[in-house]
Image (cartoon, rainbow, N blue to C red; front, side, top):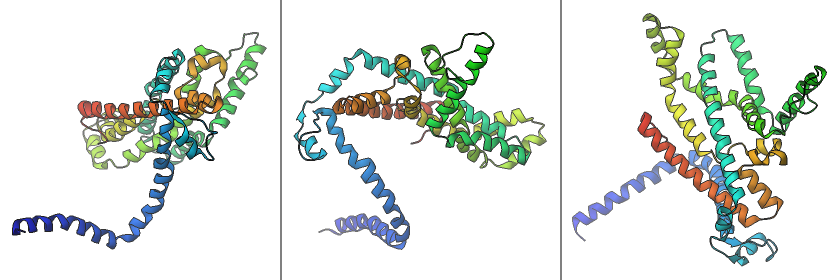
Length: 321
């Protein structure tokens, strides 16, 4: 073997040797990764094997366990996708999913940003803490409790309709009127999630160099100018990151909320992909169809994240990779 080839092999072995030495020197840190890796493998990677159900006529009663049932089920290829895309109701479900989540991005995404920016301008500590606590608390309510609160206010026999009836006015069916129900979904999610979502932006604001504000004060800049030219540009990377994540979840957001709040009367405007998967996959035991729909949802979400990241890089020069 030539000296040059020997030196190349030696150089190729150096990085791996350095990595091994580094891992041995920091074995405690790598040992802390083990529980997280086990969680990822067991709950994230192993279930991916079940995606093969989307391409089979899965029969739960075949074999002695679910794995045998998957193996013994008949392979049908793209049969369930052909069935899915030829179903007119699927187009309705898909459009509902996109419309509802697009409305949430349009109306709700800016709210925590605005809240965080304005809250940063509040300097009275007690008042600021009271506002933060009041806005954060709804996040810790489950959607069942949240629905109970709003049904007490907006339901058929709720506070608002009771007042209307005493005034001789006709009540409003907030939860069974297709024209209103989407607005209820957006309002309730904003009430519940805005405070918690603002934490990311408040954390980003704390990293801004205070001397920037001091220089702006010396130049005579008011609060709104400082917000526009210092605060918002400084937290733009966090805004872009959260927007890309939100766009990636455009086909999967709001499942628990809708499942708790909707009813057959508003299926036409509120039934989304995940609730449809739940009703078809578990309710009607259409496991193959439900899996096919879930896989379709995941692929589209990945494509949306990639596109949002590319558009973000072109427009603002920032992305998540």
